[in-house]
Length: 323
Image (tube, rainbow, N blue to C red; front, side, top):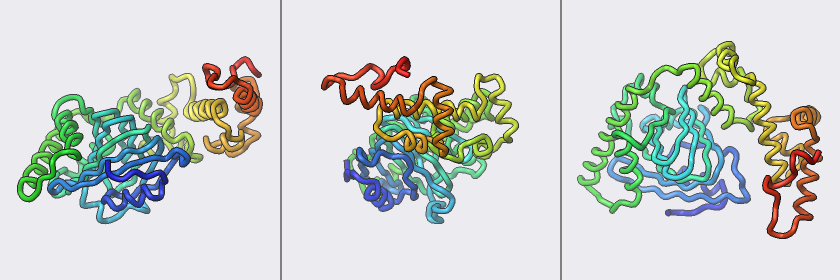
C-alpha cells in the first residue's frame, strides 16, 4: 500500500497532502509507530486508504478549514475496531461498518491497529439535507446488511480497482454516490432518540475512549452528550458505581495493567491516566487493591529480572496475593 511511515509527523504531513481534513495526534506509542497511506481519485470521489497503529486523533473547531465544508467523509473499517465521536453521535465500528463524518466539524477517533478507507464526497452530489445530516453524523452504520453492505463491499474494492478515466469514471462515481445516498436514507429510518440504556452505553464508551483526559468528569460528559448533569447522574442511579466512581475505577484498572506490564514510574503512569496528585493516587490505589502501586511495580520488575528466559507469569507480572 502506498507510502509507509514510522514517525507521526511525516504521517500527518502525508495525510494533509491527501486532502483529508486536519487532525491532531492523540495517544500513540511513538517507539512502535508504523502507518501507511495511499490516495487516488475515482471520478469526483477521493479515496484514501489508511493503515494505522492503535491510538487516538481529534479535530477541534480551531483547526477546521472552510474548504472542508464542501465535502462529506465516509469512513469504512476493513480491519480492527474504532470509535468515532461527532456531534451527538458516537459509533463503535468493526470490519465492514461505516460512519458519516462532517470534515468541517470537531471529531474524535480512537482505534486499535486498523485498516480503513476514507471517501471524500462533494456535498453538492450527495444531496443530504442539513437536518438529516445532523441525525446521521457520528452514527455507526452496520455494513453486513442492506444497501450499506453493498456500499461497504464497493468502497473496500475501489482502492485496488483498475484505474478508469473520463466519462466512465464519473458515471461509476455517480453510481457509488447514489448507493451511499440509499444506504443513508435507510439508516435514517433506524435512527431514533436514545433510550436511557442506550445513552448509558454511549456514555460508558465515551468514558473508555477518554480516560487519559484530565478534564473528563460529569460536567464534561454531560456537555458532550447534550444533556444535563442531573440527567447524567440519573442514568447511573441503578448502576453499582456513580459516573465519577466509574471514571476513577477504570483509570485505576488502566494504571494497574500498565504497572504490571510496563516499566514506567508510578508517577508517570498515574499522570498518563489523569491522576495529577501522586499522593492521592497512591491512597486510592491501596484502598482499591489492598497494596501499594510502588510495591506492585517493584515486584513486577523483580519477576522480570529473575524469571527464566522465555517464561513469564500468566498475568504478565505480580499476583494479587503479593502485597
